[in-house]
Length: 387
Image (cartoon, rainbow, N blue to C red):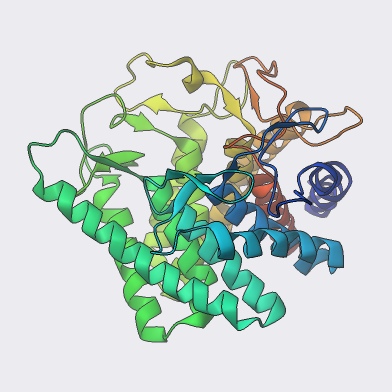
């Protein structure tokens, strides 16, 4: 297995197939920021803008600039970070989930994912430009996001008669990524305190000890909820969590937690792969009950991409060569099914269980260049290290 050839393939496809689509079709040259819903032909489907999408996209192109040193990639990233500075929140620091084309608020946020994405983007922008406004916004926003989330969770926990309140692991992953990105902007004490708290929540709230598995949705105070959402095993979200917490466990010297997470990645690689049709399932039921929604069987590109990175990192931790076999299996599936060979390029976002594209939009509220850039770059770097 020539891992360096895979690394070369990852980087080449990123630069030749993916990036040209985004630089040509997704910049809003009139109002700033990005167009977030784009057809297969590059036509805008809506001019509304998702704030989390902007943070993720800006961070991704900042990472791409670190590789290519192309000024266009930096300018692309800064168009997103600057849009967030002006339009991510209102004058009272209440964040928006969606704004219109000019930046006017449309929908309030329901969690801290948008803020976390902005923090990661601003932290990287400061690293690339030394512009202090990015650093100040990142520090302020991260601390406010953490406090707001803590208050919201406490309120839910105390409101025992207000219905079922669940929290999702993706929000925790977003905060871990934001914390790692902004490490140089805060004191060592503050970084460690926030990191310890996030790791505690990951291992004590989302880990189900009876099944020895990581859950996607748990009660606000932690713990298993025997309902449709509470029973979900979401491999993509767990792969994403491992990737988000990997650097944090290294900085905080949490070797045991990193080992535990790597072993869980290995377990999911065995149990959530679709042996009949290939690819990792979107989600499964912890009790092996039939799924309540058809998307459980869909194959999402971002899930396979996060799996590639997580499996390589898990191999670094455990040195279990079975993980390399799992990685090659999902990598081959990824390249066989998701790259779009049309003249516009880019990738297919979601397939049916048996590999048929389900829709041809290239940008949606859930699909951007973030997951491909992030994981192709990180996987390529890991492959070079393992060569």
